[in-house]
Structures are given as structure tokens and as C-alpha cells.
Image 1 (tube, rainbow, N blue to C red):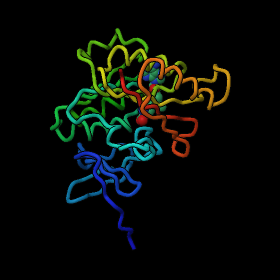
Image 2: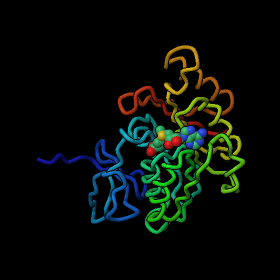
Image 3: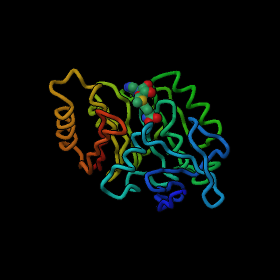
Length: 234
Ligand SMILES: C[S@@+](CC[C@H](N)C(=O)[O-])C[C@H]1O[C@@H](n2cnc3c(N)ncnc32)[C@H](O)[C@@H]1O
């Protein structure tokens, strides 16, 4: 017999059904990475896999209200390390919606041309998504695309120096009281002494020097050796 799971909306477009996360599909009939499609009250949703998305895992792991991890629908946000667009697609469902009904803008930066190909393809059916081929460390080359500060910034670049790259982006792009999320992959910081715990402790010290650390979310079980840090700009 099917389990009757409690449904909890996190926004108009994101809902939790037990431990499953679903977003209203802004491009109906199209699955981005083979995820399940399912109708709730006649509206097509896509399953957001927390094993393939650190933001998705963060929504399930946070000790605070998970909706605090999401940006305001209709706002402009910056995402560094967009990859092939798995998380980006769900964020777009929430931020922009079908035909960009919320009038959001999701600037998605990645260094890899193969990722840009996928992101550009994704953007074809998703107005409001702006793929950018660029280096998160060299924002002079693409920062012009973000003329005003943003209230939400996400980084998942999985390369050495993640905290420093994140803090530079926070200084340059995040508004006062804006929320920043840093996905930190310990294995990418192997040049530093110590194990994962030391790497995470070092990150906490650097972040706390400059911004308010709202939460340290351990992603073990979804993404081993990863943590998600949630900060607020002072
Ligand atoms: C772990 S993947 C991102 C996965 C994606 N965030 C998701 O949830 O679907 C890391 C990405 O960061 C990109 N990357 C690494 N260094 C970068 C840099 N300096 N600037 C921009 N992107 C970078 C890589 O090309 C890769 O696509």
C-alpha cells in the first residue's frame, strides 16, 4: 500500500513530500536528468535528487527552516560552478517558473565549455536562466552581467581555494543581509594540512572573520567529504 507522506510546501514551486523534494516543472514534459515527473493536484513536478544536488541535500539536512535556504522567487541570483545544470534546473523552477512568470534571473557561471553546452540547451526552454562561460575567480570578465548586488549567491566550484573565491564573490556581489551558500569539498583542499575536520574548521574561521555564519550543514551520506556553509553578509 502506498505510504501517505506529509506534504509541506517550501514555496509556490517547491514541496517536501516526506523526504522527497519536488519542484513545479517550468518546462512541462521535459525531465532534465531522467528524474521522475509526477502530478500533484494536476500540476507536473520534477523530483529533486538530494544525492545529485548539494542544495537539495541542504534542504533535507538543515536544522533551520529549509525555505530560508532558497532565494526569493523573481529575484536575481548568482550561481558559481553551475555544472551541467542539475541544481540550476530546480532553482530555475523556483525562481523563474514557466515562461519566467516570476521574472527572475539566474546567472549561472561555469568554467567548462561542456557544461556551458548543457546549460545553453537547458536555457532554451527556461527563460530567465543566463549561462555564462567564465571563471568564478575572474569576475571582471563577466561581472557586468550583474549590475546590482544580489540577495542570494551559491558556490559549488570544487576547486582549491573555495573559501577565498567565495569571500571575494560575497564582497563583490552580495547585498548587506544577503544569504550566501558555500558548498565545500574537502578533497579539493588537500594542499592544506590536516583531515576533513581541520579543513572545515579552517573554513569556519575564515568565514566567521568576515561574515555571519548562519549554519554549517554536514552533507555526509549525500555527498561525502562535503559541507554546506550558510552565511549572511554583515
Ligand atoms: C561539483 S560541479 C557543480 C555541480 C552543480 N553545482 C550541481 O549541483 O549540479 C563543480 C563545477 O565547478 C566548475 N568550476 C570549477 N572551478 C571553477 C571556477 N574557477 N569558475 C567557475 N566554475 C568552476 C566545474 O567546471 C564544475 O562544473
